[in-house]
Length: 222
Image (cartoon, rainbow, N blue to C red; front, top):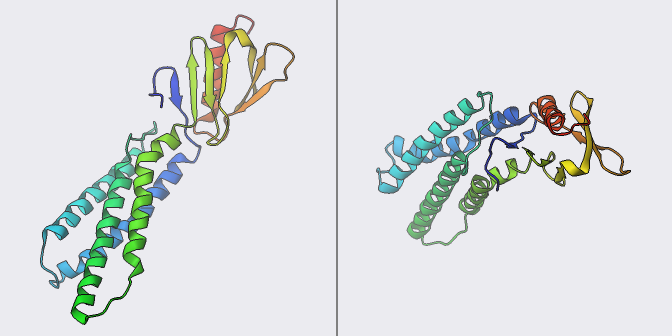
């Protein structure tokens, strides 16, 4: 994965901040699970054990990370981490709470002399694994959209599942603005112009303008 440099830029969807706020608020669900899991401790029904203390510490880190995530979304420049710590903390909470429920259920079975299956702990564990996958894979998803304006040409990918493109100046006749958020790339030869649409991206018109200005600086015919 390319590091972001003076020429290489990660592009974000236009609704990045709105979806980020919704994602951060959705993290209230693990927070509620954390509080519900600690209620027996707060009500004096369970003693404070090392396991519960670990759950409290991870919960405190989780709430601090959620507040930090909301602050990052207010910055003009989007931000993403190599590892999404908020998702990792959510996975920790879900995993610990799943184990906690399983432990209570197992103790109840031992006391009653029965054997029953409780699906909820395994469901929590499964969701925790999903959050672990997001924690380590979210950066790769975000960095699939990029624009690289280098000295020998330009390259990029504008759609999450779209094909990348790459042009060298020797293969380009012109790069022209088509509308406020779209550019036309005219390759050498008789090929039709290729449209590059930026309207669905955060600050899309500005990125279109940067591409056109980059081409104007390197193509004498423009």
